[in-house]
Image 1 (cartoon, rainbow, N blue to C red):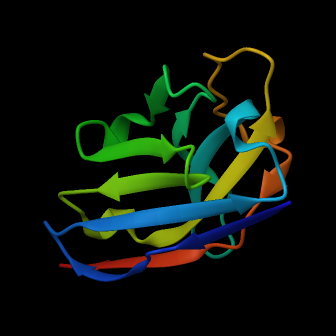
Image 2: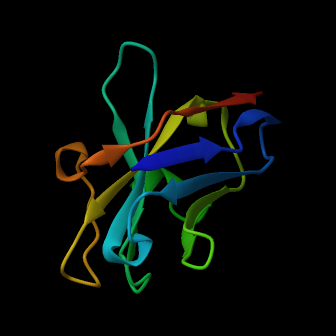
Image 3: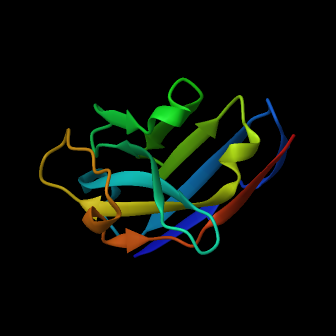
Length: 126
């Protein structure tokens, strides 16, 4: 299984970025997906999650209304659209995947995920 995250970079406050996470080596439609972020030396923070059916999504409070998670089963890819970016969104962002039997289940804890990708760095300048 491989999860390849991309789309990070430098943005100004108020700007937008779209992160992508391309999955391979798994039956994508059976996997719940999530995005987490981490600053150097810090713990992972949950950002957003989407169920395998895309019927359910969940966000951390500080990104609600600004970030949108979505998935494209035809491309085996999960996205994180980030709008109205703030300097406090500066982190390395990671995608994660876990097989689930419940099509509507979202997973919000790092311990619930089995597969992780390498991160993509997001820097937001003020």
